[in-house]
Image (spheres, rainbow, N blue to C red):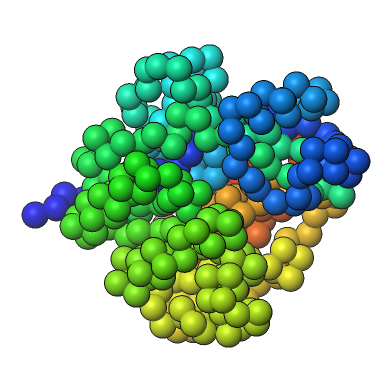
Length: 332
């Protein structure tokens, strides 16, 4: 008999340190970067771009880790599984995650493949252009999984970005099996259109098999997954296959279809958008935090929107304001 969960969420994701710098459109054009997108780069490109970047700020990041940071700030008990190297950035990442109260014990990788970093250029319109060198994170082996940790959590949270490399993909499949064998829920975020383009068949197969309980996306991602240009048609394609289907729409708010019933919520007000990095990650954090508290779907959407609004009001993908105060005001 499976024991009762002792953690709320365990996430598997890229263990990345974000390097953020202010930029302009001319710099993006000079380096042939697609504004607002995310591309994978090799070590040589990472070195070249880093050398040319304006003064930067280093902050631990990674999509799933950002979501856990928000969840931990809201009082959830969390664990993280991700691969870093035994190097300086790896030590920075591990320190930052553990300082948030998140359990992180994945064995470090030895050798000359450095810890991953994401070079993020933020233009004056707050769009972020991400250039990711996956480094050690793409070599997370199945052997590094702590299956007891996975089975101890109410929800296993997976980021689509990490589905791209072969080893982590196999690890996440094993993690899904472990979670479901323990009767736990599996949440999955689609992450980016480029990931969907490469792994659409895999993602649809996971959905068709009923292996995903909570699916997070934005408007463009769900349309890409469904291969349609209409948002409502895209939602309809998967609404009866996922118990909880959530899709954000930037300033148009967000939609959740839960057990076939559609719910909508507006975007939370923001006085000034500084940096959109982590908006989707923190939306997922807010939504899941309220979901874990068994609040209404409307409350889940509202807390997701509030957490996203907080993170886009400053630099970086980790919350700076007290999310508990934001939640208290929201549900007062």
